Length: 218
Ligand SMILES: [Zn+2]
Image (tube, rainbow, N blue to C red; front, top):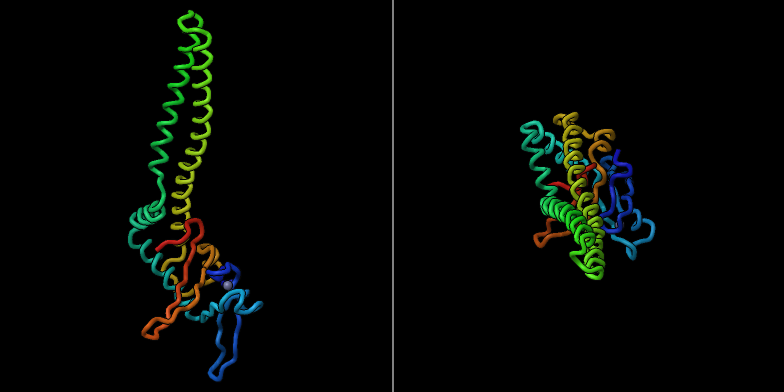
């Protein structure tokens, strides 16, 4: 059910599913396919026990499902804020308004310039130089406006994506087990890091879940 979803956090390639027979049953695990093919020169093992991974992913989906059910609006707000932490969207909106205003002003200035030239209030030389100056500014603003518009639209898309994701997770209310369908509907990829051994001998392994449409959330 994890096919295509589990990746090595270091080399980016898929983790390979494997089993090994033990006295007390079958042990299922994943490890880095680069490592198993080319050895430790290319990547490290990135071993993860299947059941541990399964339980972790299930617990995260249960966590988000519970939050969505408790307060959907609060959850939406949280996800939108989380996604905006590092972006300067409101800045883009402000800059876009400024640029659009300046473009309008330039239209007015150019119209006035033509009038002044017609009534011979300014010399041809001044007219040419001012005209060129305004036109260059117009061209720069056109580029800036299309960049800023794209940025602002991306924000609108993200909010829609978040709504889609929340709608999807609501379908799997309080999941008791994982299914391929649920994983594919909600998760884009799961990046498994190499396990670390802490000073006290405890093992720790980081697993990043990238959700569909919305990326990583914590
Ligand atoms: Zn790897």
